[in-house]
Length: 226
Image (cartoon, rainbow, N blue to C red):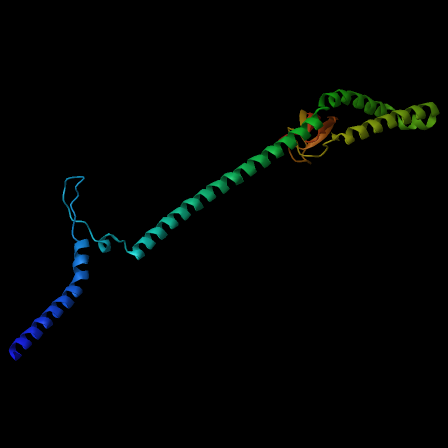
């Protein structure tokens, strides 16, 4: 009886041990079943699926790739900003040049619009000037009538010159100046050892400039080259 009792106790211990072992192995079995490779029935080919650990990308590598892409994007945007700034500055410069040209053309048009009219008045000024030069000084004091006439012509000539100056029409008398073909017209040459060659030594007819443009060059005589 004792032997039979001990046998039953041994069997009970074995059953308990088997149950505990089964409970411990059950999660491992389920995990192994989930991770077993499956067959791709849709494509008809068999292949082992990679584990999530193998498919996962290293976070540091992903972050480096993201930083590299951001740097490239920053460089592209920076270059785009530089190009747009250069175009903007060029457009500003072109606009400013256009405005300056327009202002200059407008000013020139206002100034030189009277060029033909002013040129037609120059002979009148020459006639008045010659009339004043032709009157002897001693006869002016001797004749009151001539003195009044001389004074009237003189006032007319001075008034005309003031109108010329108001419109930037300036008279030039280049005596003893260096000959300038833009503003002077050489009529003759005279040898003169006391002056440098090319010096204006005689003014036959005065010239006029409108602004910086010569509308009638002065007719002069110059010193001949040695």
